[in-house]
Image (cartoon, rainbow, N blue to C red):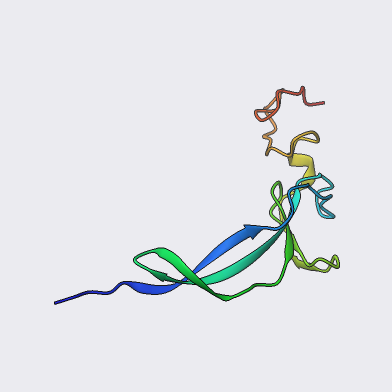
Amino acid sequence: MCFLIAGIQPKTVDLDSHSRRCSSCGLYQARLKRIDHYISLFFVRLVRVKKGDPFIQCQSCGSVFSESGETWYQATGRPENRCSRCGAPLESAFRFCPGCGKQIQ
């Protein structure tokens, strides 16, 4: 008896190494990405079967935009609850940012 484990797996590919400005939170932490789909055998990607469309995703707030700037997904987090320097989430009791150590004003 032989079992064959195969399927299609998605893989997110970074297309550009420099950060862009996110139009949602205003931080320069948005990256150009693409999701490709691969045929896999025993969880090893073998052949790309579908090349995805490029999109921009903010690593800070999670918003997703098209390359032309059209909003695909808008994160619901409020920008005032994030550090203005690094974008880390903040609680009202914090006096310093847990991500970068900057004093919160």
